[in-house]
Image (cartoon, rainbow, N blue to C red; front, side):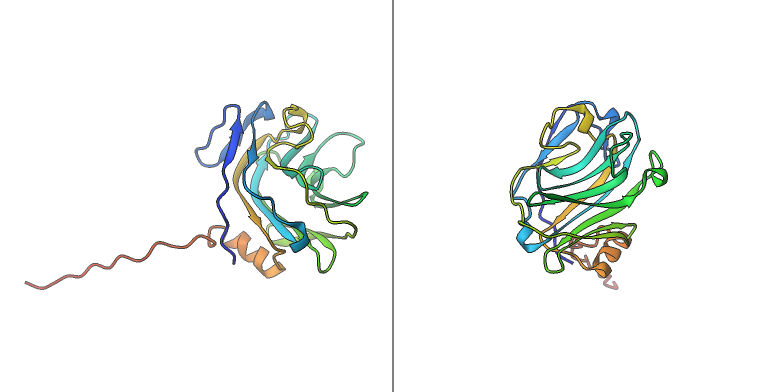
Length: 207
């Protein structure tokens, strides 16, 4: 599995980071993700482990690069799709996939998810707990614009209607489309991408 390049996240508003980033109530807590966004012409994967507390009626954005793509939780009545979703804009078309419908998202429950954009197969894939949930064929002009944001939407990043409310354990950005076996491995061993420290050997010399 690829190594993940560390990226700084400039947070706005008070946050609690013990045991994972906690964004309570989605009020004034969001951040800009520094570094170059993944080039969609190579495909990419966004993987995360997070929970949402379901507070408020809004579109909670976990991560986004508006208007190109995003992962969000939508509980706004009569606005579809609802639930935990991913989206990708190609040309004038927006394609969506669902990780879990609204009825299956339990407030406060940790969810491991991955959104994969595969340019070769022209597919957008949604994985939950390492298993494929939905696949959408998508085609058109590949966007490469906008900054990346954590816990908000770049179109109006200070608007609390778009803020994520819950906890974020990790967020990984891959500059290629992971295959299904890699996504499953990432779910089972989420920290295996980091190189382990060199073993330290101790020797006992008899006197």
